[in-house]
Amino acid sequence: MFSKVPINVSKLKKEEIDKEILRAALMAELDAINLYEQMAGMTDNKEVSSVLLDVAKEEKTHIGEFQTLLLEIDQEQVEEMEAGREEVEEELGK
Image (cartoon, rainbow, N blue to C red; front, side, top):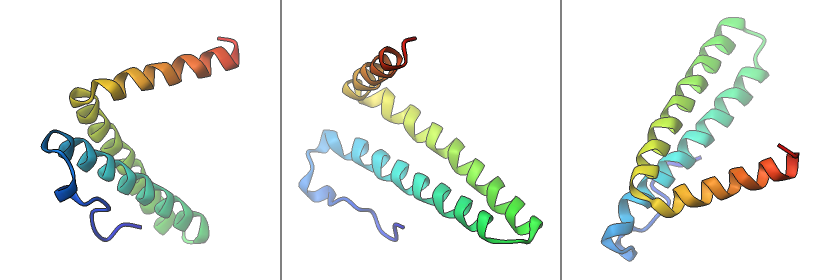
């Protein structure tokens, strides 16, 4: 879990700062999703579980927001995601 930003922006080029901030935000959201889903599975209280799973779902929306921004400012990320999609499709015979 993150309690502070896991990057030292003073060591980055100015044009890289926003990309790294967005990647750190993505990591934090993924971490939160994992935590909330694990806790939901640990409780027998349906109300607690329901709220935790709802909040985890909201974090997935946040991932979409941060990823959208990242893809707008990092063309290499766009290209590599497409390459990854193509590799998976090839591996799965699609």
